[in-house]
Amino acid sequence: MTQLWKQNLISGYQNFRAGPYKDRKNLYEQVGTQGQNPDVLVISCVDSRVSPSTIFGAHPGEIFILRNVANIVPPYAPSADYHGTSAAIEFAVVNMKVKAIMVMGHESCGGVAAFLASLDNTPDTDADADTSNEPSFLGNWIQILDAAHKRFMASDTGATGQQRQMEYAGVRQSLLNLMGFPFVEQAVAAGELSLQGAYFSIIEGRLLFADADGVFAEVPSE
Ligand SMILES: [Zn+2]
Image 1: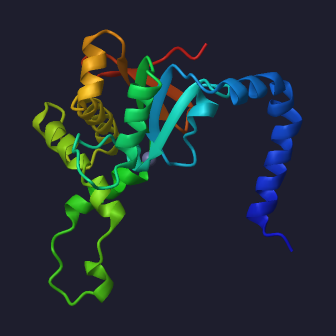
Image 2: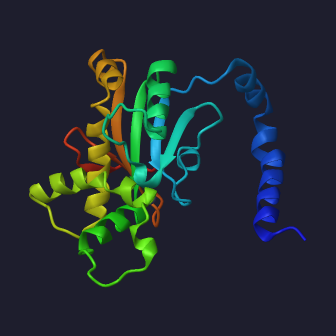
């Protein structure tokens, strides 16, 4: 018997074939043959509730999407490690020459919540299970938010535990980190690339954009 998750994916695929694909068959053929040339790179979270294609009603080939835990742009740190996020940014800017990069945070981000929870974790002196010393990719990754947290705490509105404010701060820090990539900095300086902060409120389905000062305001919904 087919598992439920597989049944759901197959029926979703069949709906796609009957609807969106059928409606845009020519476009799929065109972008499949001629290649992609998206104008925008959107960096968003892996969260299942925040789909850039859905939010922006994007057609195939329109936006290049990079998703990771908590929509983080790590600091520019060239090394022989495996930098998946940085590789995608490089590909978008250097090879595809996108005109804009949008970093989109979101409400109730589990990655941000995990970071905030980690602040409360004092070193445990009890005999923990052996697994406690195993390196965690996730734990290491979300510590990138520490720079955002420090900047936030140094600001007027800084206070620990404010999830939404930290989600905003994370977007601002990712935009700052983007400017640390030489090819991003050069493209911005040349007027060929714009950076934009954004935020998606899941409960109300609302989109916010950050202004030049990093202040978020709602985008008109109609
Ligand atoms: Zn998230």
